[in-house]
Image (tube, rainbow, N blue to C red; front, side, top):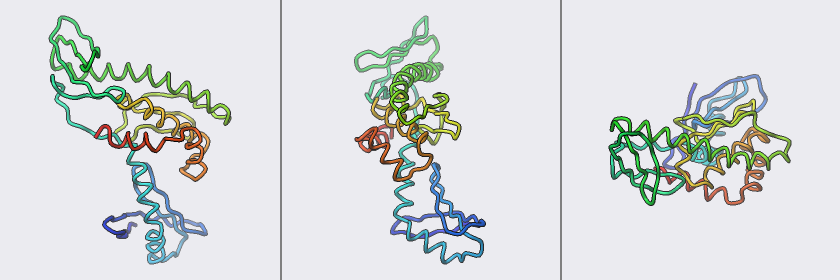
Length: 231
């Protein structure tokens, strides 16, 4: 069952799950879906009233999760295009060659290729290679710091995700989107710290945000940077 409320110009759609419980609860998921868990026999009017009362918080949570969604930009992978690496813009330069390699120099990312149709694949492999090195270096540093909270991830891995910059599973496995290598190092650290905080607090509670602020006082600056950089 679903419902919706209008809050200013925003329409909040939510699903309803009736359970054997005593109070109404609202959850906003990373995909920005809203779910209301309600006791059996709760009236739809009461549910709608509760959602409307929490509308500001719901929209704030949805905006928060939006910062973890990479923008998908259409690329042709030809000379002259702009591509990011560690927060800086570089012009792509495609060079026909007898061997394949990628390097960045000055204001260019140069792709030497034996076949122009392979440029995208070569560039993605180069990004992945750089991501593996940088993410390990940055995550190792913060994992060491978080040991004071008696937590440590089981593993930190790269995984291309359409809707997330990072995630932390219930068994302590942290996944980082290789697309993050296009963002400044501080943005990458923000995502790593965010996921490490989930090892201490699973949900986005006040305690979670207090911990995140303690570990990275200027995290909101880098969150905003991440939201806008790759648009």
